Length: 78
Image (cartoon, rainbow, N blue to C red; front, side):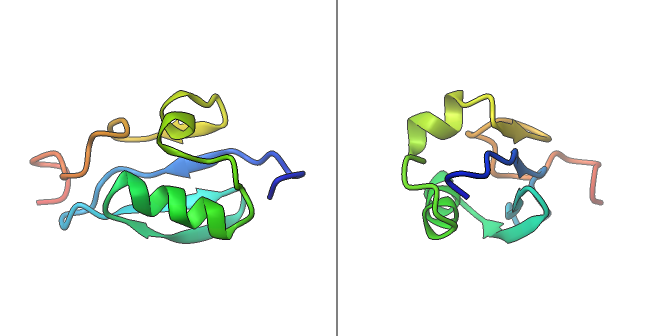
């Protein structure tokens, strides 16, 4: 993934707080913390990804809340 600068998308939290993580067309996993996202990206070859990078990079798209949102909004999945 290092040479292929695909957008990372972190989807809104599910009922259990997990957020789907995708890099380009690839599903990387369900993250329950910011550290999970960092680890998924590290395993995918993005060695420069860390907490700061995730919060500031224009390559990261946070849907349904930013990097500090890990609970589902009430009413969305009831």
